[in-house]
Image 1: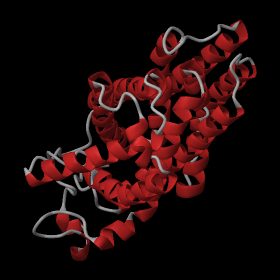
Image 2 (image 1 turned 30 degrees about the vertical axis):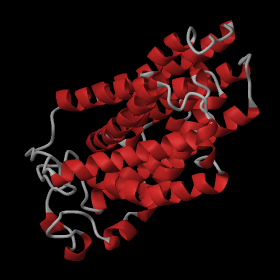
Image 3 (image 1 turned 180 degrees about the vertical axis):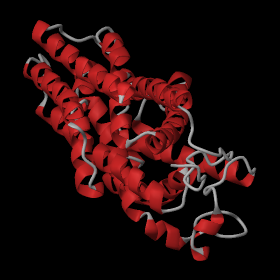
Length: 332
């Protein structure tokens, strides 16, 4: 990022110079905490409350994000770019500070990747247990390395490749000994991994070239994805079938749904911030490290998981790969 603030991902305060290692580390920890919390709230809505319409939750999260961003921008608490002078005049409305249609067209690939990522993320949570979900998600690192190489020409040193390879090996060992194997569930998770890699690579690319900060990219994603997702839920009948859901007016379920929406907004910002300050691959590894908490708690929640020694060994191998990567990044 250098000393120039034009690519600052915060959108609220000007921070001259590159943030220090402590700040970057705190951002990564914040992302991990939010990711754990959101995963459990989403799983609670889909499994504990048996909410049948995953896309409706995604739609609610998008709507909540747009409302919050609009209110914060009107109040002057956030801005969508850190230096309007660096963006073409017709891409940002000079009076309101909101992106124009030309900017929406400019970042359309990012918004498309975001919507696919959101849809697959919600669908993949339902199909497998939390320990296996997190273990299979480790292979996202390999997808991310591939996406960074083909989209940005970025390659990783051999020591990093070995660490990621260890995580993939752990996922394979654990998956081969999963006592609750589901073809559909696994397919959703792997599709989600590919979508995540593409989304993170798009963040890294458009974060540098669009001139928008994290809040600006979140706004464009929400505004472009919300109409498309609304159309999808109407065509599939998910919105129309809400009145048949027995817990719709249950205060506990509504609290879970509201927490999920707020956490999704916070996590999206943390993803942008972490990826902008560090790298898409570091973002992926942070996701793997937070899985330790998810795995330990997941064995005893949402019905529990049947224990298999080789399955658990695979989980440990994946964690060892994550630790190896973190160590390599620390000493380099």
